[in-house]
Image 1 (tube, rainbow, N blue to C red):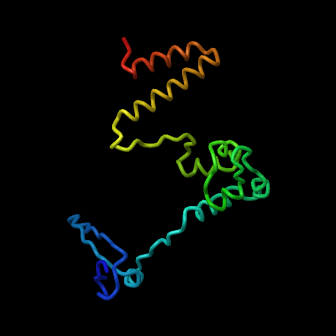
Image 2 (cartoon, rainbow, N blue to C red):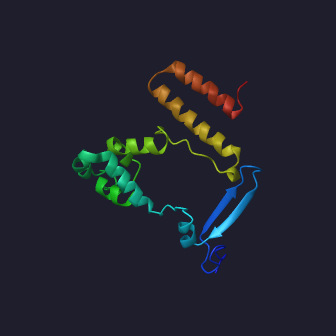
Image 3 (spheres, rainbow, N blue to C red):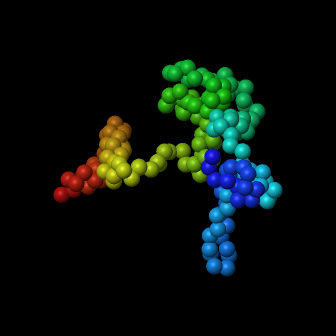
Length: 169
């Protein structure tokens, strides 16, 4: 058994509260069982599985066009929109395009309007990892610019790439 509830001293404390005194900023920790926490008016959020939350969110966003969305299936991996709604998992990268109309609002809402991944690099990977990612991104941009015959952009990206790689003489 872990820590006992500081109020009833019978049940295991599962709610941990930190009170901060406004006068001096002193912290006071309290450890309570759920029953005592409830008696004190401390409400706790019930944990819901992510797929349930996602399914509710999708249903809310899709709304009236749910029948149309339910008919969609990715031709590459075979995942249907109905399966996505049920378990919250996409099958492959192509699903983002197939279900774009229905999942883009979800992604935007979850990421504050952003639809491009701008994730973090774990500290243990070092700053080199971020640099490598930038180099790959620039190489892709360079290829795209050359393919489109946009040589001004290609030259600018090439120069940026040289600087990043340390070849910027």
